Length: 368
Ligand SMILES: *Cc1c(COP(=O)(O)O)cnc(C)c1O
Image (cartoon, rainbow, N blue to C red; front, top):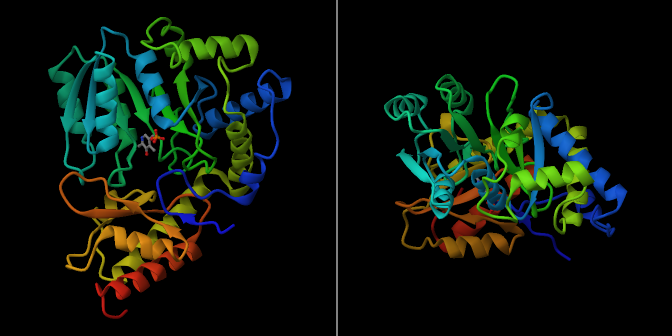
């Protein structure tokens, strides 16, 4: 079976070892599976140095399920949430809150502009009714990095709560909960931990979670209930994604063997640098300035040429074994290439070669 290499923001390319970890079946009540869950949660909290203050509550489903669980369980009905927005995942947070009939204030930014700590500070001072800030660390829509540490300090100084969607940054960009005050940090199995998709998790301050009983609008997404049950029994409340947890255990082992966050960050930085340099030699332009680009996914302007169509580029590159990703910006034509997953700069070099070949075949570029 041929294995395409995914240059996407998740699901990602996983290693053979991670895939092999899914060859056993696990009983959800069995003590060895409970130990597997506990060990995965333990490691996850340690990655961000939260063991003294935070607990990890896993949640079945894709990343959005965990975001929805966190917002539903941690923001009370009387809460009011400020959402600094520079992309689709920020907008999704606002949309989830409006489904939950909670008060939301969206602080709009341009899609190529990092969320501004100064503007957030001004908004918090102007409206003492705001109880929470909910933000995205790496906004995967454009691939922009938001200044989490500076925002966290502003929010803490104003004595408000901070909930962070760190879906595409967790394990790839350092976060230290002992120095960056965050109530809840949300991520998932199938992103930079390089597991398979199917399990989200919320790393949440234990005291915040303890006071979150009966907030939730939803039974299945009640984080507090999931945590209480898991503490009591060691089990998930409802059918766990057993194979996903087993794959994540293996992915975590490989993450530690690689050298943790700093090594993963270095590999992704290399991928990103090779990608941007290679694509620029083809005349392709990045959407973001280099200093706000996260080493996660890169947005490129579509070439301004009558022969260019993303679907044709996609098919041409796919025929050579690589899967690209469409753009997600509201105003302009773009496409995206991911830097994350079990891939290295050699793979990225092949992707840029495949892109060059396809653009030449389409007549978009003449030579390189
Ligand atoms: C991937 C991602 C999510 C979750 O998306 P799902 O499709 O539900 O897994 C949420 N936020 C960000 C920033 C993401 O990159």
